[in-house]
Length: 115
Length: 113
Image 1 (cartoon, rainbow over the protein chains, first blue to last red):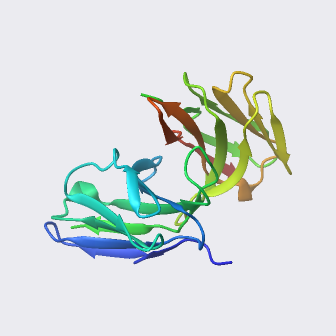
Image 2: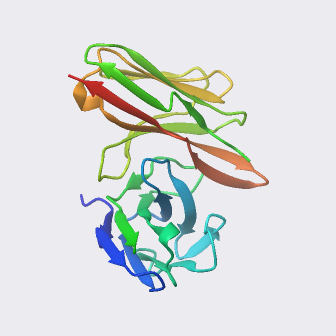
């Protein structure tokens, strides 16, 4: 079956612009996660959805970051007024059920470059 | 704050050598996963361990969960260039009534032919 897909695969934007990153989880997976990974680093948790609600937004680095999920499926991560420090790979993952379940399946990521 | 510390951070070895990567925490995890990530791709799940002392084997990879469920190790026998990548451990821990899924700091492995 289809895996997690993300779009765009690459995004170059100017400082101060807004960007939207999209994630299509595996069909039937109720939990969805967003992470950020800087070059050569580990994963930084941003936000987790169970269905359309976000029980844990603790990882969002500032109020410029927001995310939503509609229909229990597609999710969009929005970064407003982008800054150069926002440059990173943004990874989305889904799992069949929420924590403490495990086994997250990741998309290929969106590489964001803020110039 | 729960942390999953991995060691070593970087490892460069020759093909055919053996290696062990460690994942340590002061917190107890209800389960722990190991992932491998290759450049330009998302992490791919390798294994899940849930029972203290559990050992799982995946071809040349052996995974162990510590008895107290606070640590784990990944041992690779006769490493091959295809094993090159970023290895990440991750675990589920419960604090203050909520579950957190935490990724380790990562071990970047390079296997030279």
